[in-house]
Each structure stands twice: as C-alpha cells, then as structure tokens.
Image (tube, rainbow, N blue to C red; front, side, top):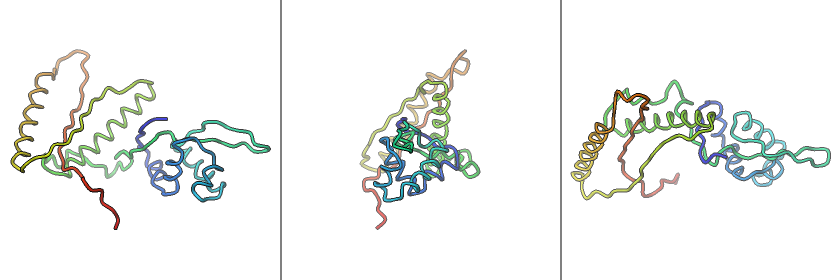
Length: 198
C-alpha cells in the first residue's frame, strides 16, 4: 500500500468522491471483506460488494487474498493507498494554468502553481512506480510569524534574492546529462482554526 496515491483518471476521481465509497476506502486502510465492511458501514453485504468491485476496477482497492468459506469465496480487499490526492489532470479541460495570470502576489496564481505541482509529482510517481524506482524530491515546511506587513514584504524580497542567487549558482544550461528540476516556494497565511459547516 502506498502512503499517498494521485488520482488522474476522471472516473476514478468521481468514484473516490462518492461518500459511501470514500468511507469504504477509509475503512480499507486495513484489509477487510464485504462482510466485515457491511457491519461497519451499515449496508448490505451485496451492496458493499458492488461498491468494492467498482473501486477495484479503478485501482483504488486491491485484492489481498481469497478465503474459501463453505460454498463461497470471500475476497479480502485493501485500499491501494492510505490517502489520495486528485490531480488537476482529472479535470483536464478546466485544470488551472499558471501561465494564464502569472502574478506572484495572487492567491489564485499560487493555487495554479500548487495544482501544477500535484499534477507533475503525480505523473512522476506513476512513472517511478512502473519503473520500480523512487522520485528524487526535496521539500521544506516551516512556520514564520511576521511582526508587520513590511516585515513580510522584506522577507519575500530577501527570499526571492536568495533563491535567485542559488539558482544562478547551480543552474548549468549546458550540463551534459544534467536533469532539470522545478523549484516551488510559497508563502501564505497559516490556517489556525479549521472552518466548520456551522
């Protein structure tokens, strides 16, 4: 089971968003059968079996084992990943494009960049899985509390200058056998209180 899987297929994305199927995926972080799941989610075994087969067709659950029980064969399934991210590729015609409005101070541009990040890393992961290799990545995550908007602006300028300096130091346009990498840096307000529906 993968820690995170990226869903690129529109039908699989739709499948994962169905509330019943999403609940089944959550329950299948540990192997289970239609019988054991039926009791947990309050549905008939046949209905659960129907949903499991649909999830299996889209690669969201996998067969772990088959057990013989009398005249029946019980299929034990598990989610193919502990969690899922839906790639913008699933919405191909309307996926965000950072080239449309490259405004470094726009939250919508940041979202478009983040969507491209999800799409690109998802594509890299799929290729790496097929080749049975790992993807070389690096990420930072930090919190910073600014005393003022002026400090935030100064931080952004210094960060931009530092990154530009590093890029010019290590970027080699003519490196034989070199491989391009994309750098993504973002600063946004932290969410300190999770919004509720109430």
